[in-house]
Image 1 (cartoon, rainbow, N blue to C red):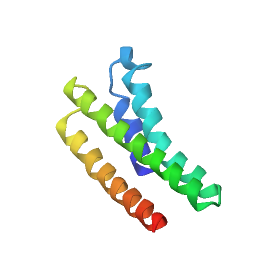
Image 2 (cartoon, one colour):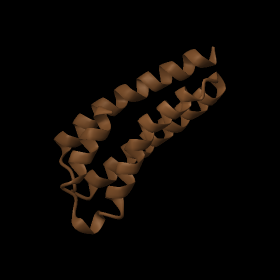
Image 3 (tube, rainbow, N blue to C red):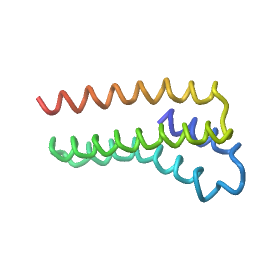
Length: 104
């Protein structure tokens, strides 16, 4: 949830012509992470939960890639990219750990 909040604040500084492009994509992929975790948990079946955790992880990777594109285009500074990357890698580790535990 913290990642989503930071992302929403961060993309406010993007150019207006990116509103329906990269801005929208980054916001959508960031929201998809906790949303899929919650939806999977609510299914009450381990197999479904694992599937939604994998979808969440894919959305996280998508967000990381989109943020790198935004940095390459000069929409965000290195400090902001590093801050969000540290948090997203932590989320990635938690997702990987949970997926592995559920698979065993």
